[in-house]
Amino acid sequence: QVQLVESGGGLVQAGGSLSVSCAASGSIFSINAMGWYRQAPGKQRELVAAITDVGSRIYADSVKGRFTISRDNAKNTVALQMNSLKPEDTAVYYCAAGRNNRYIYWGRGTQVTVSS
Image (cartoon, rainbow, N blue to C red; front, side):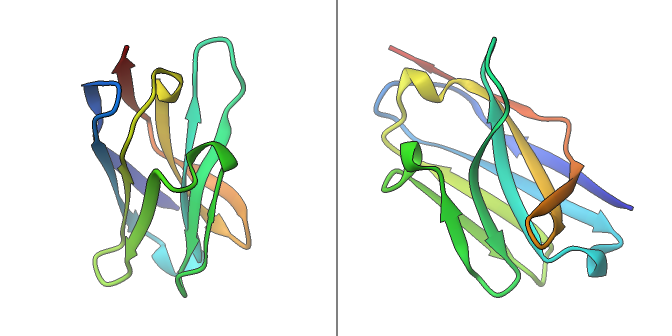
């Protein structure tokens, strides 16, 4: 089992920046990918960004150029730096972890709210 604990998030005005972080513990050897999903009210959960243990990254088209995902393998943490935030980025952001793009471990989520 892998436990994921998110931190960060909060409220920011449009155009501002926020960051969220996630710390993983437990059977870390069983995962090679960590990422961030988000879910807005009335919408499906969607992948925002992900990173593998060798640093390969993917981003949703809607956040490319604005968000940056990073990972510290020594500390088992993953972070998402969010710049130029838009109201449509408002959602609960979930940390996820798994192997080979199959995410089976989830954090409880942290709220990000962008006001217009």
